[in-house]
Amino acid sequence: MRNWKKICVSAVLFTSVFSAGAYAATTVPKIFVNGNQVQTSVQPKIINGSVFVPLRAISEGLGVNIQWDNKAKNVYVDSDPNFKTETGSVTYVSKRNLALKWIMSYDERMEEEVLKLVAPNFITDIYDVQSFPVGNYNLGSIVDMRVIGQSTNGLTVRIVQRVTAEDDYKVKVEKWDFTFENNKIKSVKVVPKSTKYLDRYTLFPGTSFGI
Image (cartoon, rainbow, N blue to C red):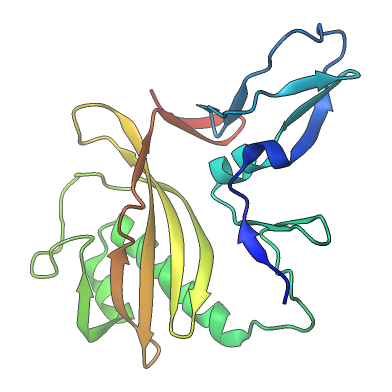
């Protein structure tokens, strides 16, 4: 059996990201992912005019899964190393659409739309289910969302949110677990220890949030 594992040593892999032109070989480049500088124990290097950075630092900064096959010396970034045939199904699309509709409806404070999507026994720790949030508190603050995993009856979505109602203007990144029941959303809960605060978040060049 192959030994698949998360890459935990950043020195294992480097990837060339672009040509460094005439920059001196002694210059140590800095890594920025989504506008935030990434610190790594292994410094980026300029080799023959190209910048090489640790692949682990880039992947973790983007919130993507990375696996290393030591035997074959292959790297899998958001890829299935055991892929032989299609393993997804239309049920994934249905669950994804439900989850993203719920996120957008909640973000816009559309209580009626939220209630249409959830099961009667719905539970969440995102807000108090007995008192749906109203007003402008963090209204329309979710700037990015992406499904990053699925289980037999659930999905995990990575959320990027502007936190404008707190003392310091920051960006919050966390994972939300969705479970489903009879084509409805049964629960939405924050994955424990998944919350991170960033100074800024660049969705794409020209659209950034934070301080």
